[in-house]
Image 1 (cartoon, rainbow, N blue to C red):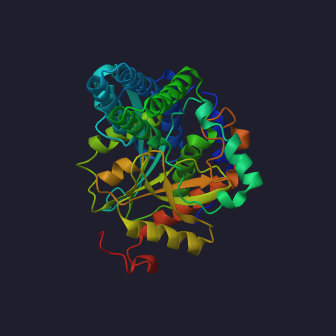
Image 2 (image 1 turned 90 degrees about the vertical axis):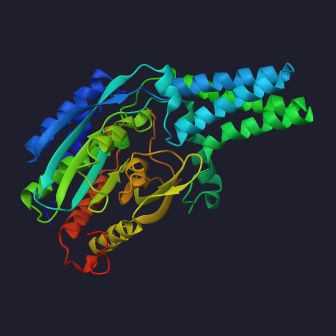
Length: 407
């Protein structure tokens, strides 16, 4: 196997981190253009920039939906229970639609359509019938008090047994339906305390979204320049030691931090080219924390296992053979790009990384800078991705003898 160029990993992260890569911004486009040029230098062919629709960051939409819920709660307290309940139900339905990657009706109705840009590059065997899509994103998130990790690190210091070994974070997005349940229970029983408690929760959520909307965009070295560096380094490795029997698409989407506008556009645009029976999606997302892991399901509101468990078994086997430590069974309570191809039927897996206190290092914080990146984990994720690439390209590999159903 080819060697990962550590200099390449640092080059990509340090070149792109200074750019303001807010979704749909000029900086996001400059990052895409830089990545496209760099992938051409790394030996990719048919490198393209593809514009897709987006509606901007999610915080303003959620803040507006919270305001609708507050209005419903106040009407309930004023004795207009039916109208208040209707507004509250509409509020929660909109929040669930946003969080769980639904059809996104509210944002399409009330937000101005904008443009994001995806980078699509090709490596590997152009004549191959089987395809691996390695999918990153180059935009970055805004920060806010919502992402402060002080409490989690303090719990880790004082009572690590409460955190260690946990594979699924608490369901933060449940606050909205929980608040609605309190308000409805208060309305039905006449207990104003329950109504006030639900109203307070909705107001807190709205305040957190307003805080997020007003704050700056972070450098995003871990989330997700670590994956952008991976795809460039992988392109160089495939140039030095090409693979046959597998087409490799190296993709970086924009507007991931809007809750996946960019990847939705990519999957829709290329659905006819990429058949679910012959295409696999590997999604490295925030792979610069100390401990590498395999994300196998996600769900802000309810959990959804990714399609293609056999593909994830292949990844685990590749990690074992390469001597790469990989924690498996991780489940996210936030949405990622991986859910979009999974719902389309593609065998899907995501590589992430965690700190000892079970968080993504510097997640959506201003401290997410190149100097705080664990490049050793980025290198391990790159080596694992290359190993998976070569395993998929070799139908007679021992790793595939019991795993041939996907063609």
